[in-house]
Length: 116
Image 1 (cartoon, rainbow, N blue to C red):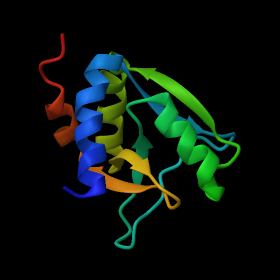
Image 2 (spheres, one colour):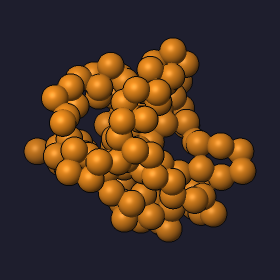
Image 3 (cartoon, helix red, strand yellow):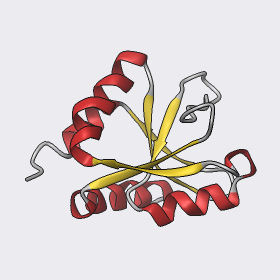
Image 4 (cartoon, one colour):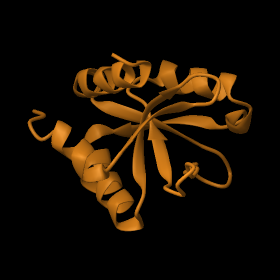
């Protein structure tokens, strides 16, 4: 299993347990960088510590605040908004370049259709 696959599996396992996701933002808002193909993704993490590591390790994200989003708000508002904006969901990005899987919002929503 690749590192990105392991982080994705952790996301799917941890989000229901945590009951929230985390994002990062600065005065300009939430980042949504483009990949080589021009597709944009907004990153989310399943634990605050994961997001804090990226903020501390990736120069482009230094000075960003880690923000908590209740999972119900994320599923009901954020994911539909990302879909309508044509953005992907960055799942537990990690490492010195903050990389990982970028997944369609509707696919991510499907991971959590049976949350209590």
